[in-house]
Image 1: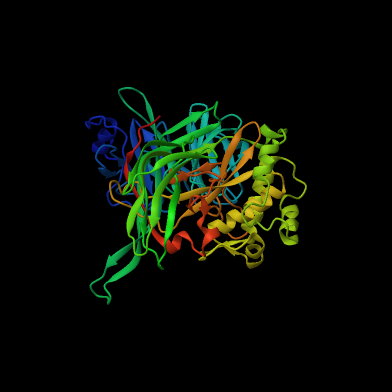
Image 2: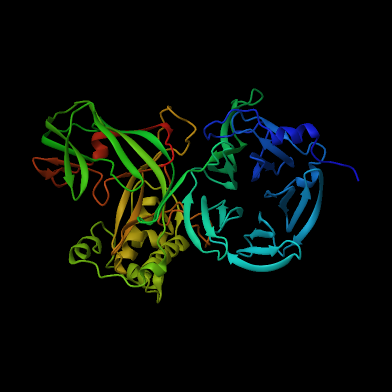
Length: 565
């Protein structure tokens, strides 16, 4: 039999690394198209490029990329995972699970599934295989190929996995989530959001000197970019290119707080108004209020300072607000004013389960009066919204299941679209298309009619490009989502529309009780920006909006990635 395996030189380079130990960093392999699987062998990080069929050794310190199967790439083309135990390589391809040795890369069939086998993990004599189509992790005994048992998959996307001691670690490509499961029972221990989309593989790489393990996750997707084509007129055209890399996933599971934090970034955010009235105005004793960033489990406010004009800080319903005061606003007056904040932001996923809150206490009279009412043109008294509220939950009584059913009901009936203004929920429901603010209005109306206290949260998202550090980034739109209240626990986040990604479901739950690092939480449950003249809302005095007076300017600058907690 021909030996298509690793040369003695390559084998030696795997066993001994002369590279100095470096802090974890992003690994960007050279000439690689789509990484779909990570594994560790002899303290080296190995990966699989499913486009070229390369089995790769990745140098975490230098991005050096070595093809280990230079004479046997074809068997690994379109493979979707990689696992290693001892001297045996395991991978999946279409419906099949294969294995081979390092010095003979001829694949041998282990087992075939009725549907696509997405991921494989190995621990001693036990083989774990994920199958999104069936919705399970199948567990096999190696020597007999007998299926021992199966665990349900938690997400809706294709999943890969690795095994560490008594834990199964599963990454879901659509959910942008890594789940830590009990290896014996499949029970969820906690889950964490990944800082990038499309995770495709994961592995724990130990430090040879300290033994400390770093969880690395591979990502593979496409990104749009502007190409300069000299043969076209105009020469600039939109096209796509492969984007794949490996990044350390930091996490901290706070079992007492019932949440897990993941990678974070130090971000500078500024919000400024450029005073530029459309018409001549003359306002006396003007008070311009702009909400400030909020301290939360995932967001820490390190510093806030004024832009252009000083402000005083006030507390409004528990939220910090910057108050700018002008003796008068005269025709043709120009000015710039606002705030700049230094924020630590991280991904967060709360770990509350329906069984944890089968019995919840009643809402206090204060909460009922504040968070169960129609206080923002929610059309809660219209027959169409009241009927929708009943249909959305059916006979469900558990609070968590009720709010999730309401979310899915809204997703079933709306598609996302941008509009210049926000219509009330009854109009939006009949139209079937809504912006993030209109999703929020419908979610609020249906939730409050079903006795679930909830409030609007926002206000902006940092463009999610953490590799573009110290470069000013400007979001295209503002953004809002909601928080719902669980008596005895507190407020939990739920995104408005980003999880509505497939017609009629199933919908991911990545941002149900979770937020990614790039959300900026500002002014929970209060108006983001308001004007008063002589103590009276300007809207009560004139047919005038903030947009008639000023243009807002929003800027984010990602300064650096935060170290692990």
